Amino acid sequence: MIKRLDLVRDRIGRAAGRSGRGQDAVTLVAVAKTVPAETIVAALNLGIRDLGENRVQEAEEKIFRVRSAPGGGQARWHLIGHLQRNKAARAVGAFDRVHGVDGLELAAALSRHAVAASRVLPVMIEVNVMGVASQFGVAPDEIEPLVRAVSELPGLALDGLMTVGARPGRAEDSRPAFARLREMRDRVARASGVRLPELSMGMSGDFEVAIEEGSTMVRVGAAIFGGRTSRA
Ligand SMILES: *Cc1c(COP(=O)(O)O)cnc(C)c1O
Image (tube, rainbow, N blue to C red; front, side, top):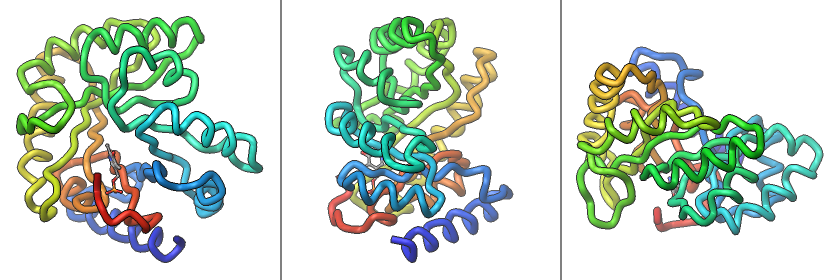
């Protein structure tokens, strides 16, 4: 894992440089959805701090096990997958950030549970930039009203947008969607007055392209942990 992680960090640093930024402008979220708790603890020992999981139920037990391991409390947990409204309470209980808010009802449920827990939960809105049928997220013309509404909700700190690139495919296939998400962010932030500094985009297959297009959070699983051949 250490070799793969070093390589990923090096590639992030170079891509950040090409976008005129430093390596620390990009948060590496290590996607651990298929990885056992012991491997996650080992990753924390290698300096990983941000971990991504895509299913609440499967993550809960792992998060509990990692948190009770030595040093395990340093991890920040990102929910990167689709979230159903009826799991909002558990998501608030287990996670430090939710990447994929895709509707006002889900946002309202997260808000309610965050307020009940006396927490402020950072969230991002997921956008289906290209209108791909198999992808989650709101349509581009729904971003601005949703940004305005979610930014008013107590207990949530909306600070960015998230998307999934083209797949399967070559990294360059994702570039148009990443560039467009950044443009949409710029436009919506200007129109709404809501600051949206974060852009969660880029996975193992396309994180360098995403960083070149302005990503501030890359969600990388297979390139760090190996194993999975499919990117699904
Ligand atoms: C699995 C997953 C990732 C990471 O994919 P890799 O190809 O393993 O890097 C990123 N984002 C989401 C939403 C995922 O479900």
